[in-house]
Image (cartoon, rainbow, N blue to C red; front, side):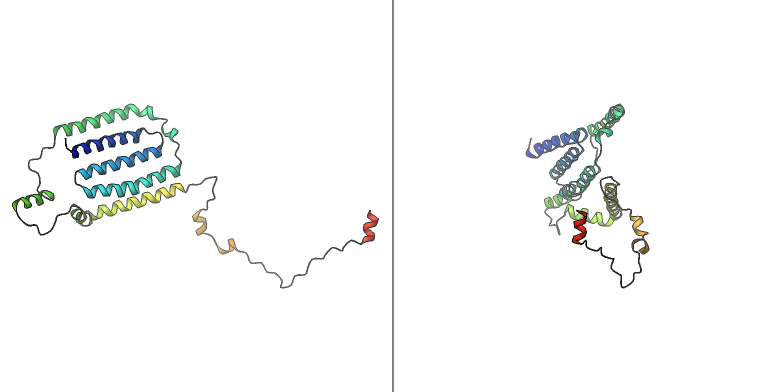
Length: 228
């Protein structure tokens, strides 16, 4: 067993453990952190498969943006996990049956193998074939460059749609955190829009000269002595 195979089994074992802890951790923050570990191990496996672009996108997009959003939502909403786990064992048999069916389907596909008559010759395979034939390539073939061409030409509309969905998710998370509480002050934006100047400012007409109020007369010493 070479180093690549050893690292593959190591990353796969850590990935399976982290994925198991995502669904078994009692604290949702710990579950989100274990999901970050799962993404990093998947990125490491993609690096072993020489898919550098997919690995760095997984780290930057999911770990650096999506998981930060998840942690923000979990920590700001203050979710009561006891209420969420109230019906866990009630729905556990159905979930177990569905999980077993999915596992059997994946086993049937993976154990049968992938039957491909002839592997497509493109990308790295074309470069290797040309190098063996002794030909000189005009330019190097880059996975990142080819993926960039596809994303911003053929798949431009799905890319923009995904960006809009992420923007809506961010706005929704912020809107959920601004719910009404008893311990903070909240102003309805609709009332601010409909406000008028007469509701905030009242002009009162006052005379330019106002008479001073009468001052009380000071008590005399004789009067003080009589009171004593």
